[in-house]
Amino acid sequence: MTSIDQTPLNTADGKRTYDLDRSHVFHSWSAQGSLNPFVVAGGSGCTVWDYDGNEYLDFSSQLVNTNIGHQHPAVVEAITRQAETLATVAPSHANLARGEAAERILSHAPAGFSKVFFTNGGADAIENAIRMARLTTGRDKVLTTYRSYHGNTGAAIVATGDWRRMPNEYARGHVHFFGPFLYRSEFWAETPEQESERALRHLERVIQSEGADGIAAILLETVPGTAGILVPPPGYLAGVRALADKYGIKLILDEVMAGFGRTGRWLALDDFDVVPDLITFAKGVNSGYVPAGGVIISDEIAAAFNDRVFPGGLTYSGHPLAMAAIVGALDAMESEGIVDNARMIGEQHLGPGLKKLQEKHPMIGEVRGVGVFWALDLVTDRNTREPVPASVIGGLKADLQRRGLLAFTAENRIHVVPPCIVTPDEVEQALALYDEAFTAAESA
Ligand code: PLP
Image 1 (cartoon, rainbow, N blue to C red):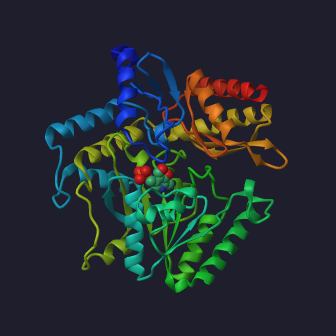
Image 2 (cartoon, rainbow, N blue to C red):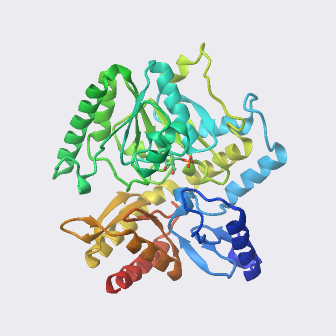
Image 3 (cartoon, protein in one colour):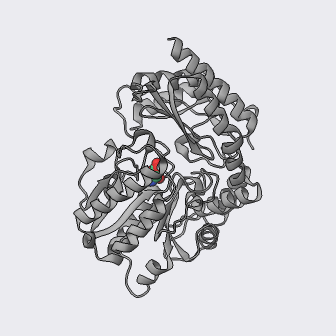
């Protein structure tokens, strides 16, 4: 693995990187004028560094995707080897890396799934899963939760529940409902059981009110991520499956963020008694070393396209470099016990450590999560649960960075989402930095 000592670093390169970015790069989800991007020169494992030689613990996993950490040598080598063999190939041709990637992915899927459709990332996986559900049901509507993010393409962004949907509402047939979230319950629930039961009742009423025979799919993140790391309460996902069956609706589970190690399971759905019809994935499948995503397709849906044309495709579907990265990443995750590590870290280090922080800092209203997938829900008052303003989150993020930690923030929350390879020592270091930053924020 590359280390900081092997990388030639100088401040001039850092300045040039920053200047080129500010002059010519148009960034996602931002007003461009006031951006001040962090300049990354390199990385290794859970650490990244800038051109001045400052090191940072990456507790964001970039965009919650570097599950295997930075510059894992097995993945870099797999990409290099494939680049030397065949750097690109048409999607219509058969290619060994693609077949092996599909086989590896399916080995972690529930029984009854034996085909994968590859895409360039998560959003187009969602587009194609929705398309498959619509074509196989002959129905149009797609039900998703308000607290969700499903990607930035035509249907995926309108399936999204959060604010990013509204300026993009051009796709049709999307209906939103409230999923379970006990800490900020829409259902006046006081226990996880009540939240689950009432959220299911609400969903059934939405299905009936929208007209069940017009609904193609219910699309859910198995564990909603960007919306706040909302681990579903007992019985919820099984209850959604039962409603989908009752009304002839396909169930799509979006595992783009939660899948491939993040929850300490190969798929987040492994923790629940649920088998969907379609599973979308991206991010952790190859830690984003080369962009890739896809849809894991149930045998029943795959069979529907045996004699009927599937009207969808991409030039880079199953791109060999991305596929080699999948094989390299999944093999290394398996042989190095990386998924088990994520589980152990959550149970023995991150979960207990963050709960201790909560005892000390009144600003932390709730700690929730699993594996290496945790949210700190920050409040101005624990009784009212009023979210802290954006300025507090912005201040904490900047302060953590000054102290040497890259944080992931969303709305009033800090998401604690290190790579799945994170060690107990790195967790201790990070907890100390969060502690210092909260202490500073509370005394400000
Ligand atoms: N679905 C979920 C749950 C996500 O978290 C994301 C991205 O964060 C997407 C879909 C979209 O993936 P991509 O950005 O690769 O298109």
